[in-house]
Image (cartoon, rainbow, N blue to C red; front, side, top):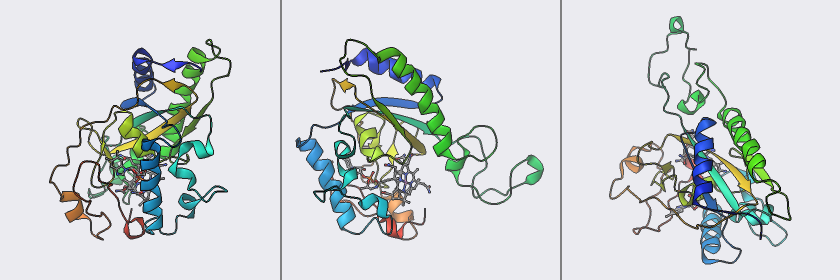
Length: 253
Ligand code: B12
């Protein structure tokens, strides 16, 4: 076995993620193949695809030679994956809202710009993929400096993703303690809210603790379901473990 991350490592990672510009960070282990957690996650993913909720997003439906969905289990695509560092950036920045009047005299571009396109903090619109990936790379460099060659026969392996990785980032965010999955299917943190963007570093480092799930605080609230103009947010079955889904084919995002 290689390096096993402990609580102190997690704290160090959180600290370095904040230094790189993230608001929250945590670590989740990748479930063992055929474990009940891996199977539950795989089942949730397959059920969503099989229901047709992915619409025309063909890349989400990719399968391996055994016809298993690649994104249902991270180890299908990345066999060496043992833990996932999940970082979150709040996009509720001091920038105009899409419903505000846009005033070019104040230096804002005209037109409506989605809130998540303001992550750059430079005052100009930005692509969150680029912004977050640069921050992840900073953290990745520090990880390599700290863990490469530390009593492990195999070298540390890492891969950074914002959106594009073969994993459901939100399921990992929950297990990394970032927040809970709300009825709108977004990861919600009690202090930061749901306007979070996620970035992940998949690593070959083992992580000692399996689950740090945050408490689900949606309760009986249905405001997101009621407000959704196309009925894309589906009403979940009752119960704390109920899957929360949206029909992406109906989502106007
Ligand atoms: C495809 C996609 C979309 C699609 C489909 C959305 C969807 N709900 O699946 C569309 C285009 C509609 C979309 C829209 C948006 N998206 Co989007 N999207 C993605 C992407 C690339 C893949 C999502 C995916 O795999 N969906 C398939 C389903 C099955 O996966 P899932 O919803 O994550 O569900 C898993 C877990 O939630 C878990 N689960 C479900 N219920 C429960 C219950 C419990 C108790 C537990 C433990 C687990 C669990 O099981 C599922 C399977 O593992 C991710 C990035 C990524 N790689 O993960 C971003 C991502 C989910 N999107 C994001 C964002 C910000 C948005 C928008 C807000 C953007 C906008 N325009 O405003 C909207 C929000 C719409 C919404 N309510 O989801 C963020 C979410 C951040 C957050 N706070 O959670 C992500 C993570 C991108 C990022 N890097 O930050 N998106």
